[in-house]
Image (tube, rainbow over the protein chains, first blue to last red):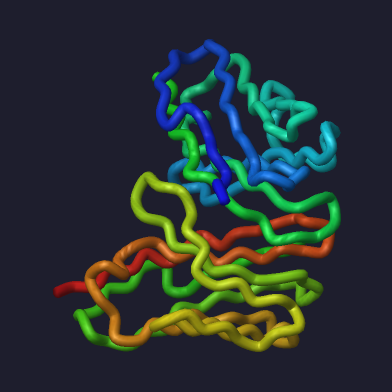
Length: 113
Length: 111
């Protein structure tokens, strides 16, 4: 069974640009979670989507947004990139909106210059 | 608000030693607790998951315990090897799916 996949693996953007990160959950999983791991700040919860709807949001500004598609894959969009957005972005998936174990993808490393 | 603390922040041991990593959390109403390994610049590798109704889990040289009432978990690594060098993260998942991570313990095992 394929695990959670994320693309791209790495990318470099310039301050002020916009970026889109992608995540494909494990087959059969309907919930997708996004986390940010910035240097020195630890893993922080960003967003949770289930059945195409945003279920919860972490303490991040509105320029962080996302969506979930009918096939349960998800995108994370970050507008007006700032240097401090440089981080490893991790996606996780779980079976549904009830409480289930989360399975993590390999992450996307974003560098903002 | 759940807070997860890991002690120590860093640990360096000679190869072959047994070691214990500690994790504490402030809210005992948890769904599960999970230990992860993270190599530099990489994603998370799940090591052990303990459901709230369980007391411990074992996998190979790893053993994790959970004491919900005291808000503590320990990860025991037996006969450490240089390949065990990594950052170990403890994460607590609440019943509303909120998942909180500790800052991690950076382990170095010297040959």
